[in-house]
Length: 334
Ligand code: AHM
Ligand code: MG
Image 1 (cartoon, rainbow, N blue to C red):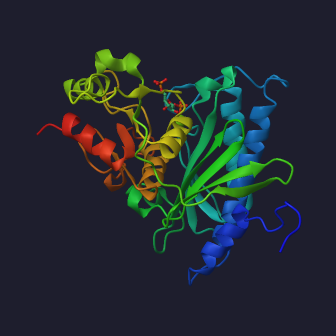
Image 2 (image 1 turned 135 degrees about the vertical axis):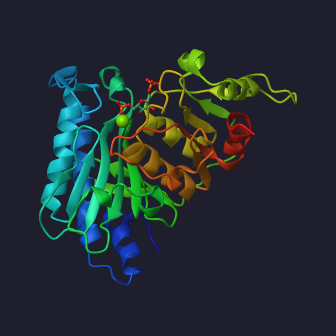
């Protein structure tokens, strides 16, 4: 019995991972060390975002990344933080970053490949709006010393996926294939604490999240689908629109409140905008682990796709099962 209200037995992310690892027979502790390196990079990115206005880290860096996007100073810093953490972990042989044209091969004893968008949604940074880091982890193929083959694989083969949203607090949401759990960074302890165990997408709120400014480029099916949400034929209330323009924040809200998030392929972006390997796959695994679904514009399960190049793009539709089924009935030609 406790006579005070202080939590003296907190479940940190490291403790949580160790507990999950104990259930895996071949667990060697390498995965825990890799996750520790990732956690450190998230804390460092969170810290730099938080002080960015004060120390002149906002604005453009004057460079552009592999896919031609202009880079923000924080994009460059986030990328460096992430890559250095992966190198220092000594557990990773292959690194893919949105900010690097080529994959990075590392030496050492690692058995993992990590794919990452270090700061996603960076166009929101200067306005102080939430951004996030998205990541996925593959175990190297049997006998591999690290090569591009370790990452040109279907999303189903990911052993771990997650994101950290840098908002009012830093929120890390992670799955190792047996459910989805959310952790919040306690700044004073410097630890991610389990605050959202066993996350499931609710079915309660009718919200759609899409860049409606692209309507002119949409397919007829996409247009008809969103029209159906705004003008329901069955007399139900129209959906609410919410669009932050940071995938991590839009997906985080979808997991907590329900609804659908989409970045469809359209006439302007024929393969969509989002990258399959380090945006589509991790978010698809995450939403499925929360009981939802993720498909592309053909209605194919995102996790079944196999990328041909590391920066390949894909249309993405994700949300609760019911919302995705409704979308599918409009967007996939019969
Ligand atoms: P980025 O990786 O260059 O930051 O772009 C990805 C972001 C996503 O976070 C977000 O869903 C999307 O781009 C928003 O794009 P748009 O401004 O076209 O709506
Ligand atoms: Mg991105």
